[in-house]
Image (tube, rainbow, N blue to C red; front, side, top):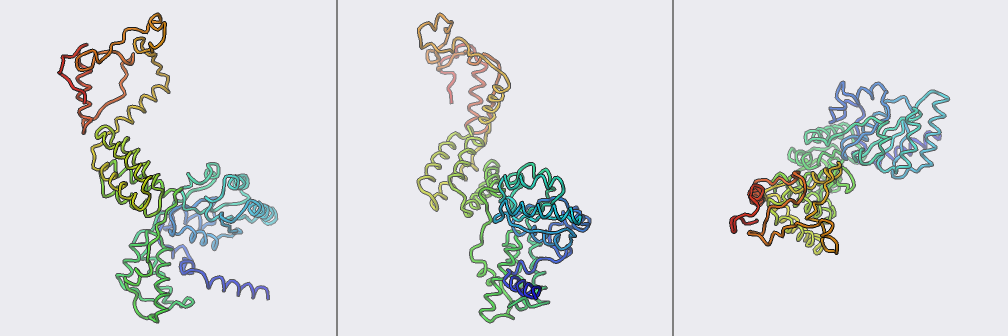
Length: 450
């Protein structure tokens, strides 16, 4: 009787599952995408088929099949399979699972796979609890995360796991997932879903606007089906307009602490550096639509103004500084305007990284033991007795023509600043070349600093 009740409970749970969960692939052959891991002879597939997968972390963007693969592992393994979610699981539950796994192994020789969804949500203490029993083989952990494990998971735990990176599905992959779903809906009616006809333009739109996320594509399809059912249009082909209506506002996946955060920010800065304003504006837009902190964006742009444009266009730093103030003063949505203006200006400016190269080279020299004493003539003279200490001989440049006199300011022949021949910095290069090759006192009016 208890088995019958449990069957009924399971059926009720399955009835409320989203369409994406109901249509998970049941075999590896049904799985779409991730050929580098799951094609015939690929490493992860071989390990799954032979039930020899050790502790592993599956990571990648949402909707690319990580959880579906975990369920396929559960279906094929002869080991006990225990599932928890790191959001809700606490240390007592983890300890209990480990204790049960140890008992099962000692009594029957059967191992345990502990599937941890969103493993990056485990704090350091929870991750550390797993280490001894993972290393001794008492449990095999199977972690799933959307985060870069090198950012989100302790190094000792990473070292005990194999990492499998899942890629965002291609548009062709998403189209294949949708066709597969339509085929299943034609073969059997799932709850209230009737067989579905999807127009070609609707399929193309759905596949191209799902951002590689199969779950999002199937959720949009499910919404379109529900709307069609409510309007008694079950046998009418779904059009692109139906898909747009079901999509409404497309959510942008973005975790401000995760991999996507760093990747998009990196793309923005590299597009500015590469002088591509269209790419830079796109990545800026993606950060803004995903509600990234505009102050963070402004700081990164200001850094680029100095690091990548530098003295090729010195006004860039002043413009970036004004942009930072405007962003703080205005807030969103108006802050998008000075952000965009500055990004375009920087992308279209001539570039020089000589300033950051100069300071990094000088700091490296200091750290590596290049200790140069201050030349006596440059030392402080604002106290009685300085002359007796030899702090004499300084030549005041403004007493000389052009405000310059040949004088040793470093006490070494080291050179750190190498100006480019671009923009304003080209004048710097010419100026320094003349100074470095001049006699002690240049002719009056022969040279003008930039």
